[in-house]
Image (cartoon, rainbow, N blue to C red; front, side, top):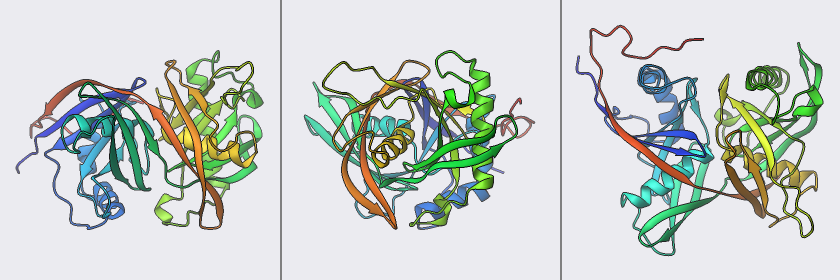
Length: 340
């Protein structure tokens, strides 16, 4: 048996890692991106575990696998991966990938801004990469149609009884909760308590709510919980109260170090639905690392029966390093392990 050799580039966006797999992954048979996602889960999941879990990764590692696009307008396509499986959208990784694509010449650099069209499992995402002095910098991307799936939904939990959540879609579905309504504070509560709450609420929402997406049933699942400080982060002409902090718990118990790009998209869609934010109003969101993303709804659209918006999210990614990962047949832990 010939074992693969995988080459990766590691970046971070606001502290959240993106391990970009650039060489060595086995080829796919499916012609579609969602088909490749299913194929990766069914045939190559040992490689995901090997890169995301220890000893090569850690409990909060995140990855991006470059694959051939099937969308005619796409420059490149990606499968997102984490400690539990494969997500449908990831904003922080999109920001990292867009900068990497320009820096490496995968997309020809054009000043002052280069457009990168990235096919994600949720659809085509268009990124705009600022270029100055020959260097790629700040990235903003236009989301797929984002919408409020449910407002003030009640989900039963073991710890807090009935909890009121909003369900927003920003490339993935999130249960969004004001942390104060369950006695928590996203700035002061121990992270372990926030993780426990996020996991329990996501499971409760998945068990009690039937989600649907107009494009594909593979998109219709609760990806995680976003616990907020109750604010909107909306910039106003008067005294600005500052960014809204949130903590995103996804894929079981993984904590996003960034403000969560697809989560920002979902939050803005919910705020538009509640008339807390208007089109073209900039909102600023902050993560547990203090990193910030800016977001704004730039236009209205539809997603099936849902009124939707296109949201533009901006952030910056940085390089960490690069690796060549090898696998030995006599290593009992070669495909990774997780310590619960």
